[in-house]
Every structure is written in structure tokens, then in C-alpha cells.
Amino acid sequence: MKKLFPVFITAIVLTVISCEKEYSLENSGDVTGSGQIIGVDCRITKIAYNDTSAAGAGIGAITALINSTDQVTNITKFDSLSLTIDFIATPVYSNDTVHINADEYFLVNAATKRINQLHALVDPTDPFSIQYEVNYFYDGAGYLINKFYTFTSNPGIPFYIVRYTYLGGKLTNMRGNEQIAGVDGDLITNADVSYFSNIIPKNFLYIFPDEESYPYFNQFYNFGQKPSNAVKDIKVRYFDPGNVVRDSTVSSFSNYIMSRDNYVLSVIMDGDDQISIPAAAGKLSFSYKCK
View: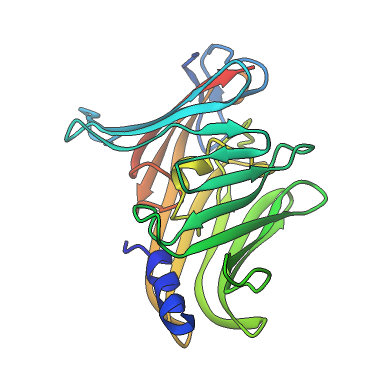
């Protein structure tokens, strides 16, 4: 899959100027095994991904270090095939601000602890790159429902809006539209998501199918309530001007292995990689840190 957002935003600019293991819950809903307890109020700290062959060779992992005050102090993405670090960040905290590097940062709502805003660069490797903001809006139940993208030089006027639709605590649809004079322009991307009705994990993955620029942070910070059920299928579509489908990514999830207290220990992700999930398709295994 090609990177979508940098291409889209560039076009706009040019135009405008540890506990693991083994309690099995298959898709039929049958429960077997004795299992162990993960703990109370735990969240994901590591996603390791392996191929699904009999050998199960490691592909890579993304890991967050979380300190005793529940702050993420390091995020590292490691490529097991080339034995290299693909990504590393050491966030720095100052009051309501999480500096993810020297030039970019998140703003946190002091009351809800949710991310309210991202200040970012079109090209994070160039400190003189055009700056923009992403503002995050939540509904009364705490679910992320909109993301407004605005240029720092033109505050309050979105050039791109992402909208999320929920049904019964599950994000089922996403739409991202270019904005022209305050109204929807071309559709840039949309997605449909389905879930297992009988698998209800604790504190599992965020499913924001549009998120490609900062997915390494997405799973480790507070973007509101997570889906109530385990994801089953994700289909994301990408559009050329005129709402013509250009490309799509389709992924399915199966063979959920759960802890006794309903944390996901592993799942098989088949099909395409998803830009919003910082792991390659294959067997995804999860580690947790408990408060």
C-alpha cells in the first residue's frame, strides 16, 4: 500500500500554498484450557508479529516502555528479519504536552487524559516543513468521532476531516473527505469494519483505519474508548479524484487466543497489512502492563 496522507497533504499544499498464555477462545465461542490471569486495568505494551508457517519465524515487534506513573517513555519498532530498528521515539512530558520529537507534540486533556490535538509537520524529517494540527473530538460516551486537519498558518479552517461511525460500542465505518470552502470535497478514503459478537476483549486495539502518519503512537496513548468487541474484518478503500476507487486493503482476524480474564494474547491477521496497525500480517502476539 502506498502512503496516502503525505501525497494528499502535499497536493493540498501545492494547491493552497507480563503475563502470557493460554486460554483458548476460538471463533465458534468454545472455551478450553486453564489459562492464567493477566491482571486488573492492563494495557498493551508490545505487539510481536510472526509468520504463520509451522516455523513461526519472527518478523518484528513494536514495544512501548511504560513507567510507574503510566507514561510511555520509549517506543521502538524492531525488524527481526534485518535486525534493525525501524523506528524509535522517546517522548518527553511537560504539563499537558507530550513531545514526541523536537518539533511535534500531542496535547492531552487534563481531565479526561485523552489526546486532544497533534501538532505535526508534513515532513517530520524537515523542521522547516509546513506545520499542521489534528484536532480530536469525542462523543459523550468517550468515543473518537472526528479528526479535523488544519494548517497552522490557517487555523480553524479544516482541509481534511475524518468521521467515525459507531454501532453498539464498535467503530463500523470511517470516511475521510477533502474540505473545500467548509464543505466535503472528494472522498480520500473510507472503511468498513466488522466484529465477532462472542469475543469481548479487555483494552484491545484501537481501530482507526485512516491512521497512517502516527500509528506507532496510536496504540499506546489515550484516544478514547476502544471497540467493545474483537475485530473480525477491515476493508479500507482509497480514492482518486472524482471518488474513483484506486486501491484497497482487506484484512481478516481469526483464532483469537484469550487469557482467562479476557485479554487477547494472540490473533491471526490474514490478508493485507493495515497502515493503522503497526504490525505486519501474520500471527500477532500481545504483552501487557498492569497498573
